[in-house]
Length: 410
Image (tube, rainbow, N blue to C red):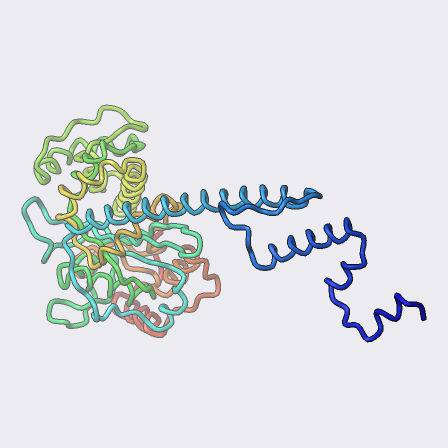
């Protein structure tokens, strides 16, 4: 063993000891490398603090890339904050508009929803839209419903179907004394308001409706006028009824009716659109009226979506005339979601019925109720294997026994 080896006998090897016997240039580079590694470990790259020179250029590109990534994150964060504030502002504005609705509290009331319907229609939000026959200056209490439409929204994708139900449909309901009777659907509102109409629809059609909106013809006319009119395709068989009943509608809503002179797609005023909803004598009867009512509703929804600046006028002029059991939050979310809803072809119910006089009164008797309920759930809710509840089966049998009608005339 030579002298140098002897000097290292039993020595504790450390970086300092090694550097004493290394090449000075190599030691300098090793020290530089260790300092750079310490900076990475302890995060010493703070703003304004000098960084060790990187003689190999390893740090320059990652540093620039990191700064660019931080700038992108800040920009994304700022955009999200602005959008969130805008959404809050819009929602607050819509809430303020809905504050003037004539709201009824139906919490805890019996909507007559069967357990089966509640489960099978969980994916649908069904809202009853009720057109009252109350004239100008009259309240809704005791009024009948000229039009009954169910706005059905599929929650998963926003698909919308409007289901019109004939006002003269022969169904089971409760009267003013809470007795169970068979009568026209239109009378359910006169007996017990919107909640009674909703319960009648749920009881007889196996539905899950919990929300309703009631408005009169003046509210329809005011809404259309506030939106600047709506586009409607007027057919030749409708002009006669429109011009015959238009002046009466004008008197009911407090404004003048302007005669319609030609067919085809045209912009209707509030009085004209309201008359278009009401006519039925020579324009397809109740079935035709239901179809026209759905066209006007669709036209109003489309125009409202493209005319957000007119919502304030609607709030002051129309909202106080609209009665509903929906909360401000429910109405606001529906209004905000309306641009994303996909309106599909509507459904008219009943599909098969006997239309005629029974006991001196004209009815539309479902033939049979069970058959029509199955058809409705297949057509509107894609339930091909639907089986009606025991309650609907019982009501259907009662209708056949009371009227003797088991087949429709159309």
